[in-house]
Length: 624
Image (cartoon, rainbow, N blue to C red; front, side, top):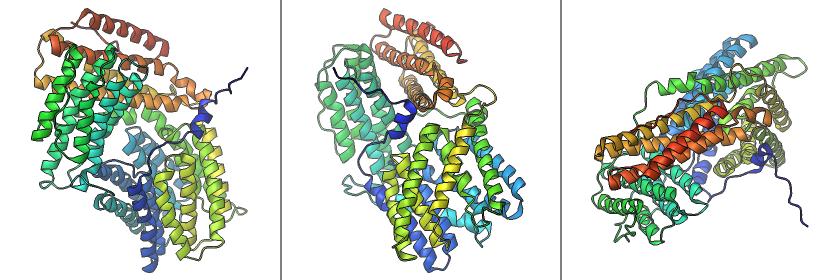
């Protein structure tokens, strides 16, 4: 009799899990051409200290250089770079003019601001990270230049990578204007996800495929939502991409309704979306599309959506991103809501404690005046950010990666010529960052090598042991502060995400029921419906991601989000059922008894889950 091995606890399993996928060769090339060449240029111009700052900025931008469109990269890389430049300015002037106590208080306040802002979303979180890291470096790294010069050098380093992201062509690009390869890949992935969901209808994998479709739609929406690369010359291409994305929305709606019904469909149903995906990737005509059997409302909706897509592809017009206009108070609600308050307080306490401890050790006679005290708070930033992964997982990965990276660098430092060998090591490390970001320990190891090389190029001695000591101390500080009792109810980040998903599901359900009551749905009403459906699925995906991260914390922290998973699962089923109702209404002009019974049952389940979880969510009405 064989015995199965016991399952690893979630906090340890998360630390061992790595992302998979093809090597992002474009990002590897940009990484190789970024930090190393920037540093080399500064050394040749005899401005090594500014080159070190620029290379750090290029490294931080490289961590954010993820696959996607060029237009999206402007915001994803540019906004954090601006925050980092501001942090360098604030850190330099406060470090030059304030004593240890005042400096600790100011940087703690900066941590509170950056933590609260980080609750808005991924780009804001990256901006908060760079604000704190740059402020610590500006306050602690000894350099002769003024604060504005260091801030400008930071912006130049990040701007160089943004320029490479916009200018360099994609390898093996064969679909016309290479500037839009990211958008084409994102839109094509939506059609592939629709086809995969149709193949999975009636099977156990349908739920996972529907979630994958949501992710593909989110990615495509973000890829197309950035600024235009050129206002006039690219307008025809952009209109075509927008039309192709918009044509996928009714296909996604029909596929979701088929998955909700659970009746398997023939392989013919998925052939059309796959041909559309190939047409998007190759920038070619669609050709004839096989029509599915029109034997059910959702199949008829799928057939109609295919015809609409073929027409939209041919004319290249119509449709937009169906993005709900954001309220100007939404970011403020995120910052000052339960999630933002908890996030900001947690970051401020850890960052401020790290600055205070570092200042004490820096000014203690036995510790040495030339210690890199800014490493301690800068390391704490990456450890305390809740959206970067569970706390213990981050600590374990950070410690292991730092030790490995420091040992590897010590070996290279013993044999490489200076400074040319170290500059080459910086370039190689920059090229490895896009691959290393798949696991936090690997990313930490590569970044450690890069930072230690920059320190030596800047004229300081080899500091591998100091780097290990600072990191382990930061790990201890974050572990202690991260588990301290917090004012108010813990789990605010998860609760705010669930509340946002609840509001979006409510808006979507209300709109569909109002259509059913009024007995009509014109093109404008359907566009609003697709916008609300996108918002509902996007917020559910964000809530699911937050719950997954919170569930991988130690039990003392994970218990604060208990019950949220059941609420989100019921909301997902409710939104799926609402989508099926919309398709049924478009086909027959009314809702069947099965649909209304399912909605009523899910609303009852949601009320029960809400009570069990203790989440403060309003009751969703069933009207009409």
